[in-house]
Image (tube, rainbow, N blue to C red; front, side):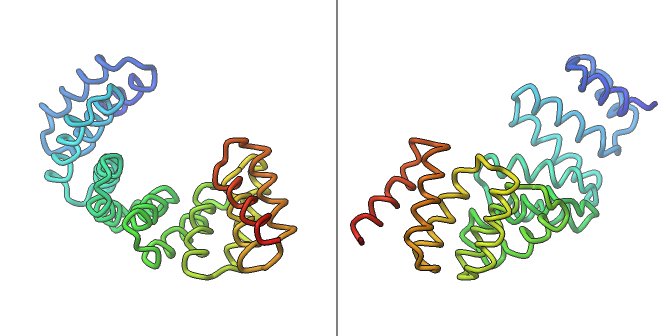
Length: 218
């Protein structure tokens, strides 16, 4: 087991300082080992030192521009800082360099959503769902993107799947209510979904507002 693997084991055990020592040794012995910089960054991130962590992720990209894990880690930091355009670029590079996984596609899609580029987000969110059909949050965001692009029938189908997978997903019930109130023109069904959202989350303001709006229209 090399120092990177040993350090990862120590990190899993919560032994941060010991993990840092091993990653430091690995960097000193192999200064072009991108994994060591990534792992060092992960430890700093775990310790809440995001600013220093990102410098190690950037160094990992510098020594190996094809290190997918470094691009993903950098993207995650940028996303957390609400630097969504930079995050999207980093997640794209992660995917391009081999990290074709549900999480990387989901985070790329989410970055585009936060940039109000819904059409761009759609294929990546769809890919995330294809990779992991049980990822409820990815499916929920995909459904919202479908609704925003007026693909209402498909959005309804995916939201129904979300509430089948997670019976406590108040926001999915609320959005089903919106679809049934608007596109499907079924006020009774819409009310049922708003009620369900409020049953799960009594302070769901949007569901409460939806119910009041329906009452005014009756």
